[in-house]
Length: 408
Image 1 (cartoon, rainbow, N blue to C red):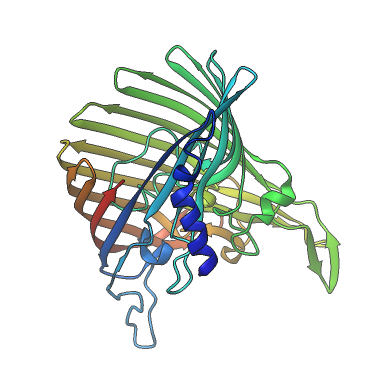
Image 2: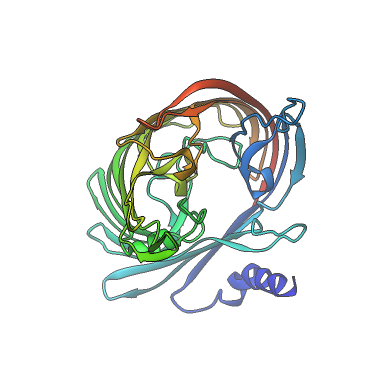
């Protein structure tokens, strides 16, 4: 813990240590945040329950009682955040800047550990071009995101991911064009060995994104396309023999987003035709569609989901908000070999629906709010002929969240 305390201390005092360094400016920011929550049952979640996704399916015991029908509650402060924005001397005709942002969410049991949220350098030119290198928000998270209290920021309907990337942007009049090459480390794809960066690393090709946004008088709209190509395995075993295999699964996803914002009104929405987006905290994955009888080499087919969310917020000091999200399993292009050879998240869910109203009180450095979330997942059986889910039953979790944030 001592080294983490020293690192935090250095971060806190960086602005004062280097305040007089020539041609550099520093802006230190952050907040202290507390989350108090209650769930009516067990859920798929991360960060010890603070990052909530959707309810778990029924898990009957020997008497038929649901082991996941168990309320839970806790109070955490480890999403407290610290950040530093910097500008530096020009490089040629390019202005330089950088960001380092951390929080205490890299914890293990009772120990709160610093983790990197964002860390990048950026070069920008007067004619509208910029080049970013480092870790920041995934472009599918994008310029449009829900204004909600829950830490999940609308997941699993809203893509959620911060990854290392090389991002080029060009701004021309009211349009911004973006191209990114993205590499996994923390937010990972699923596969035969669980979630791992090895599938993209072995596939060599980075995840690619291209998009365009239009912005004018409080309105922003955008379109984007994403491609990810993975190598699930490098070798197989058949009849006690090991074979080198050349396997790959490639998928393409499409995104449209829009928002309108004034001082007292925020309207936003995003829709995706998503394919194999487990690394973005969304439903989906891929399954085995065929197996070579001699070498065991496998072919794969990705699942597809239609996912949409809408968000409305009214007010400034007193804010009322409503978030709604819906995801539908569209199945796979090819047939599947077995449900046991299907890798992903929520692959046995046909539909997912979320309705979440909230209310908050906002001052210049304070926010206090409460949010209720009802999430229903329709679990069922996977149809091997098309990857869709049938014979469903609805499972609902009721979540109540209270938040207090002090900004500095």
